[in-house]
Image 1 (cartoon, rainbow, N blue to C red):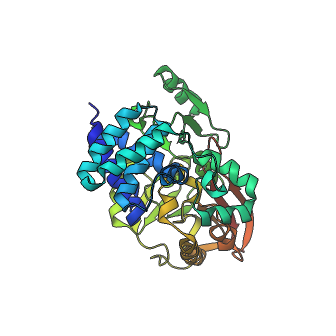
Image 2 (cartoon, one colour):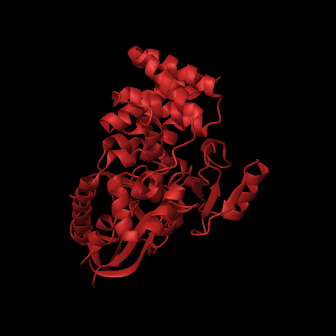
Image 3 (cartoon, helix red, strand yellow):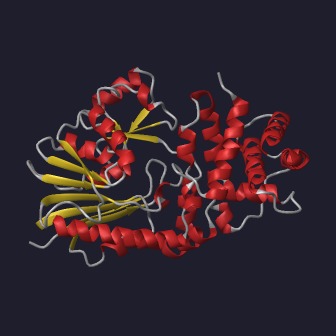
Length: 402
C-alpha cells in the first residue's frame, strides 16, 4: 500500500540533499522502502526537471528567501499542484503536515504560499534559461555551441520522462512478440538494430527473459556507439570504466570468441557489475579492479578499447535531472582533464592499427571533440542531441597508426 506521507517527507529531504548539498538523488531513492519509492521518485525527479519554472512560480509569493529545506518543500508542493492533478486542498494539507516534521515554524508560510500557487496561473514571463529548465551557465554554453533553437528542441525532451530502452542481442523480433503477448507495448529502435523502446517506468524485472539474460537496459544511442567498435574473433577488448557492466555484457554477447577485460576503479561497483554479467551469461569477461589512468597492462597489449569515460552527464538530464545541480562549468573542465588522461593511457596500451571508441553521455564540446583532438585518425564521429527516443551522446572511433 502506498505510504504517501512518508513518500512526501522523503522527497522533501532528498530534494534538500540535492539542491543544498549536491548529493545524488538516485542513491537516496534506492534506500527507500518500495511502498514510498514510486511517489518520492515522481516528486523528486519532477521537481528537478521543472525546477527553474517552479522556482519562479513559488518565489513571486515570498518576501524573503526561505531556508533550504523549506524551499525544497515549497517546490515539491508546487510540482504536485501543477503537474500531478491532485486536489489543491489535499496537496496543501499534506505539505503542511510534512512541514511539521522538517521545520514547524514555517507551517504558516507553506500554507499561504501553496494556496497562492493553487489559486494562480503559472508565471508567463520566464527568461530563456528558465523556460528551458536549465541552469543559466548550461543554457548559455549550449546556446553558443548549438544555437538557441536547437537548445529549445533539446530542452523540450529533457523536461519529459524518458522511455525505457533495452538491447536484445539475440532475436529482437521474437523478443518483441513475447513482450507484446505479455501485455507490453514496444517499438523497434531506429538507431540500433538491437534496440526496443517501452514506456518509461516499465518494471524491468517483469519483462520476458529478464532472468535468462535475453536483454539488457541501455539507451539506443549508447547501443549505436558500441556497435561501431570493430571486434574480431579472439581479440582482447578493453572496456574502461565498465560498471555497471551493460557495455561489457553486450560486447561479450555480440563477440563470444573475444576476451573482454572489464575495468573499473570503484570496488563498491564491482559486485553489481559481476551480477549483471552473470545475468547476461557473459562468460568471456574478466573483471579488473584498476584506474583507467594507470592500467596494469604493458604497452600495446590490446587490440580494441571502449572508453566510456566519466562525464558531467549533460546528455541524460531527463534520466538524471539532479546532474543539473551536481555539476557546473568548472566540472566540465575538470572532467575533460580526466578524460584526456584516460585517452592517453588507452593509447599507450593499444596496439598499432588498433581502435579506441571514446564515448560519453555529455554533449559539451569540451568533453567531446576537444578530448580526442590530436589522438590519431578519426574513423567515425557523431554527437546525438536528446530526442524523444534516445539520450544525448557522443562517440568517436579512433585508429592508432600502424
